Image (cartoon, rainbow, N blue to C red):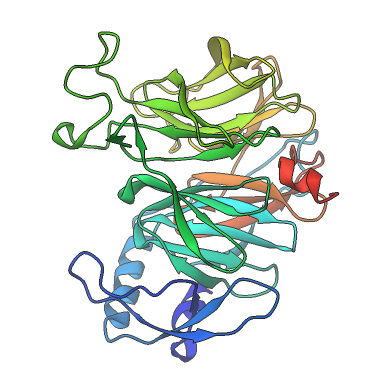
Length: 366
């Protein structure tokens, strides 16, 4: 249970000192050594802990159980979701580390966690609106920190640095999700609809090519060059096909669909189209988290759970969870475990086909 992970015994772990942030007193941290891994800190109990626990209890009451009957014999090895941890506010950003653990965030509480199967989650560090995550080709953790309008990078020593925070001098709106190409490029989404108009800096007041829309997918090259891959209505999750010839981008909010963007050998856009329309059903869920398995099937959150689609866009079925699915990732040693971030909890089940491996996994020989 997350309550024990954060507050049991008055301790949890983090890699940065929280201090004071936005006029609120932060938790107190004490350094601990951790040979051969991420640096850790100990979080001492703060008087406001009781208020935080009561807040979490009220949040959990908002989410009603969803139907969980699964019948997808071509997709699922296990049909029932196992809850691994609960008591969060809004989970996001799941990512498997080949050393045997998951990363994920509690977005609304600005916390990045590490979850080792069979153990309690531990706090890695605080974030500023941490959301989507990935690794670069060196295995450093990349996090979209939307409230801070930037992407950060963290190495194995726990040091956090700003990776990129602006385009042509204008700060990003709210970076949402990020992936890594085998050539080392990072692609990330930056929707603008949740950033008030008076705070938007991309494009500037004069617009760009007679456009004033700043919702985009960006491409960050290994040499630091930043370019626009595509303009989108509300870009959210994204993923690459196994051959990296196609990028899928979930479009959220006003219209719910998935873009398919054809890429050239260098990873630049050639053409684009609509891969699938998710404007169906009345159950909770929107296009958000998006992944691809090793045979090219596309998985995307949507109404009712995680939609599974064939490479031609035809829907195979929906993987259902006890709560609304927000984001998910393939992991485990064989990449056949799906970890689902679903509002207040994280769940897991097994699939028959492994996920498409991150290029860093391949470099490690996995």
